[in-house]
Amino acid sequence: MSETPLIVFIVIGLPSICLTIIFLTKMILKQGKETKKQHSDEDTEVIDQIYYGIKDLHKRVDNLETILHAKDRE
Image (cartoon, rainbow, N blue to C red; front, side, top):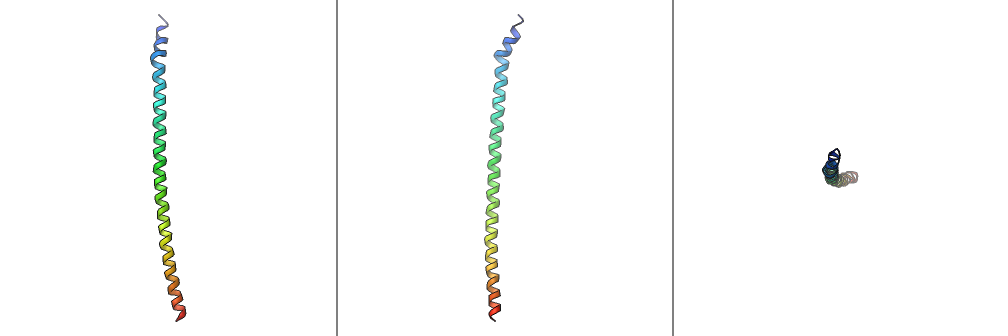
């Protein structure tokens, strides 16, 4: 009779614990992938903003150079 709790633990408890650990591990890994994707999207957006900002700045510098050259000619 004293072996009954041990058998119940082995048959029911141990598999339940293992499945819980596997489920939690998969859930944590899935959450980590979503976070990485979110960061990647944010990084891409920041890089795009920097690129277009530099592109606009280059146009402004070209315009200022044109104005300066025009003043030098006068």
